[in-house]
Every structure is written in C-alpha cells, then in structure tokens.
Length: 446
Image (cartoon, rainbow, N blue to C red; front, side, top):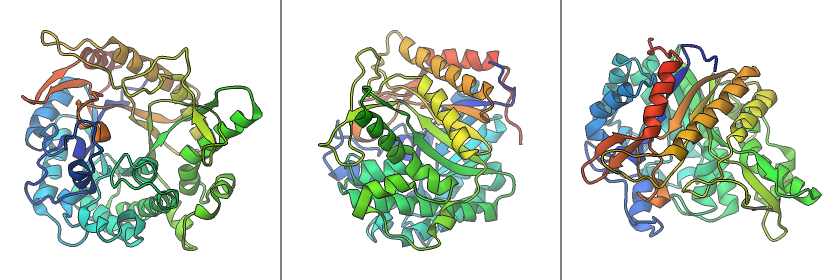
C-alpha cells in the first residue's frame, strides 16, 4: 500500500466506555453516569461503573496494545476524573493516572493520542446548564490548560472533542445519549457552544504545548440519494450539510453554511460577533470517524433536511444496522482535502460491531477482518491521490460499554469476557497485527 514506516496504526477507546472505577480516587459523576443509572434508555439497563476495568488494568492493556504491533493508541481523558466538579479544584490522583498511562505508552513505542472530551461532562457543570451555558466553554478551556500543563508534549496528538455533532444531535435532539434532551433549537445551541469550546480549547492547548499536534475529531458521512429525483438529490445535499458542513465550515472557513443556516430558520443558535473567529483556529491534524454512508430519499414529513434513510437492498450491514460502504471513506477523505486543505488527517475511528462468539478460546470474525481490510484499502487509495493521511486507528481496542446499547454490541479488536475481564484478541486483531508488520511500521519515538 506504499505507506511509510512512520505511519501510525493502532486503536481507539474512550474513558467512560472502558475505565470503570466510577467512584474511585476522587472522580465524581458525569452526565453519562446520571444517564446510565436513571434514564431507563440503556438497552440492557447497565452502566459504565466497571466497564472494562481499565483504570486498574491499564498496564495489562498497554502490554496488549504493544503485543498487537500497534504504534499508536487513542484514549480520552475523563474531565470528571481530572476536575471533578468541572471547574475549580484539580484532582491530583486523576492527573496521575493519565501521567502514568502516557509514560507507559512512550516506553513501549506507542504514540499517545489524547482526546479531551468524549461526552462525559461533569455533573457539576451540567447542573449549571451544561453545554447550553456559554460559561461551560470557558471551563473547558481551563480544563484543557490543566491537562496540557501536566502531560505537555509527551502526548503526540491532542483532540479537543470527539464528535461534537453526536454530542449535540444524539444528546439534545434524538435523546438517545446523555443528557437525553429532544429539542432541535437546544441541539443547535449546544453545537455552537461545543465549537466555541473547541476554539477556546485550541488556544489553551497552543499556549501550553510546543510540538504536540492539535486538532479535533469529527464524525463524517457521505450522503447519496436513493433515487434519481431532484428532490432526493436535494435531500442528500441538505443532509450532508447538516451532518458535515455545519461543523467543518465554522471550524475551517470561519462561517456557517448559508444554505443550511437558512434551512434551520428561527432555530439557529445565538452567538456573539467574535465567536466564529474563535472557532476558526488553525489546526495541525483533523481526526475523522467513519462508519457508514447516508442513503436517503426526500421526505416532506421529516423536518429539515427533509431526508429519510432508505436501506439499500444490495448492501451488507453491521450488528448496529450500519451499511458497510468502504468507498465512502475514500470519498470523504478526498472531499475534505479538496474543500478545506487541512494539513494532516488521521482516521480516528473506523470499525464494525458484530455478533461475536467466543468458541474454544478464539473469536472468528471474518466480516470484521474484511471490513478493516477494505477500509484500509480505501484510505490508501485516498492517500495515493495526495490526501495527507498519517494514521489509521480502529474502533475499538476492546469490547466495551457501547453507550445506549450497554454491553449488547461488540466493536472490539479484542473480546472482553466481562465476568473475568479477560481480553482475547479476535481473528481480526491478529490479521491487523500481521498487516502492520507487513508495512514495516516502526515504533514511535519522540
């Protein structure tokens, strides 16, 4: 595939999904603790209180990452573990945990990719209005400064946020994620505040690092019309704008897309004159999460963007019901590079949930193996056209707490037997290990 030896291969995780230790060493609840315990919307009724017990098993997990040949690892830092109330007193034990993790990764030749926010807002801030409160943006910048002052340039790459679109839309419009709201105007205001917090966070990170790569992680999706009608083509255009351009254009061009702004009408967010300047900070790297395409038709019964999902009869799907469409990754990489010319792109998440079964100590998952291979191929095709891609990080290292699905979905390269917490590399993990070796990927060195 003509990938350089310095290319990064690895896997990603997030704090609430794997750490556990929800009430240990000074950590206080986040909105996901509250949602998991009280909403009644988790499929199996379970919580992330223990999850994969990574907080206690992190040494074992770093050894596993190393054994799988990875030279990069993306994790998130739990805001309520570092600053338990969200603002104010810093929890030394929380920072110590991430300090030790980063040092161990470096010892093993693994580049640390740290995400500052993967959906776990401290409840102390949520009680003050959460992401609907503009002051939360400044609290986030203070938190970013605290982390960067401690971890500094030992972290290879910092991302301010993971999927601000998902935080806003699924948490405040669809109600499937914490905090469980269902209000379009609130979702748009939250989206704006998340992007403002990104800009303020970038400024804080830039002031406290010298060589670390700084950026954000966005989930992306191409949209294709399900039929040839002009109405469905317009619906696909609008849906692409809602999902992708609404976040990318403020961050990279300094303005909201006018057609999508007009489509939202009176629901557009309130903002101050300088907000877009703050949001549009120069970045070093853009992480993208890609899982599936949108396949839609026009529906006047749906609110803007008037698009209804249509299941393609000839496609295959994951256990999440997501279409397997590897060419969409190539399409998005090429389009993002063309439209925004960001200096570096890395695949921050890409993977598939499958109905995995442990049999005789092995997990045979040929569909996931093929999924990884086809998407890595699509990535390499985009790179061959000149897209500056520096890493591929699969989702996820471990089976884990899959948000509203609880423990009923398995995305991991490694099977987790939750009663024993044993980690068992699946066939796909072994294939990826051998593929990485074939690319002569070298260990990370600072």
